[in-house]
Image 1: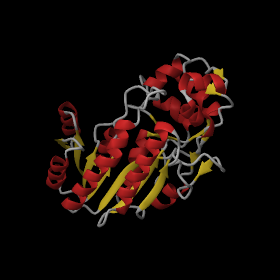
Image 2: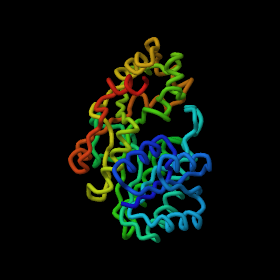
Image 3: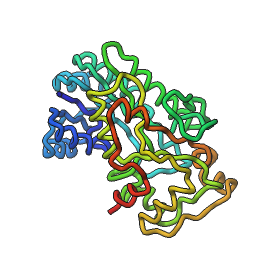
Image 4: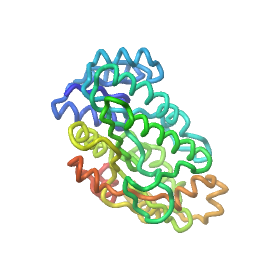
Length: 310
C-alpha cells in the first residue's frame, strides 16, 4: 500500500516508518527539517520537507505521493515538560489547522483511509477509573488543559467526519520509549532520576501507558483493519501514579520518588497538573485488540519501563 506519513521523524513517526517498510508498504514521510528528511531516505522511505500549515505545499506533496492511506502523527511538543506553562498550544494548533489541511490534501489526492493520533487521557474524571471509547471526554476542563482537550476533540471530528475518507482515530496512552519525555535522556526521566517528580497526595490518578513501538504497530494494523471510529491504544494495565512511578524510578536506577501533599503540589505545579495526578482516568484497549487485531508487545509498563531504558 502507498502510505503518506505526516510527522514521520517524531517519536511515533520514526518506528512507524520502520514498521511500514518492514511490512512491505511504499512510504512517503513528511518532516519540516531537511536533515530529518535525509534520515528518512536512508531508512528506505521517500521524503518530503513540508510544513502542515502550508496548505498549498501540503496538497502538492500528498498529491505527488499518490497515497492510498494518510497517517497523521503530527505534534509539536516541547523538549521539556513545564507544568506551569502552556506546553500544549503549538500541538493544539496543529491538531486543528494542520488536520484541516491534511484532510483536504488527503481527499484531493484520492486517499481512501486516514489514521490519526489522539490521546487516551482525555476522559472526564468521574466514575470508573478505566474508560472505554464511549465514555465522555473532558472537553470543559479548566485552563490550558481544556484548550488542549477541545483541540483534540476537533481533530477527532475532522478525522472521522471527512467525506470520502475512512477515518480512524487512535487514542494513545502516555508515551514511553525512545524519543519521548520518559525515554532515556528525556526530560521526565531526568526529573524522576533527580526526585523532582513526586507522588502527589494519594497518587490516585490512573495512567494508561503505551510504548512508541506498540503505537506504531497499531497504526500499521489500522491500515487494513477496523471500522472507522475511535480506538484506545494503551497497554493492558492502567495503574495509579502511586503504583507506576516507583517502578519507573527503579527502572532508571533512581531512588524512590518523594511524596508531597496536594496543597504543596498546587503551589509548585498548579491545580491543573495536580488534577492530572489525582483524577486522570485510564483506558481499556479491548476494542483495539478485538477490531484491529493489535496486541502490544509491551503489555505492561512493569516490564516495559525497564526494557525501554536498557
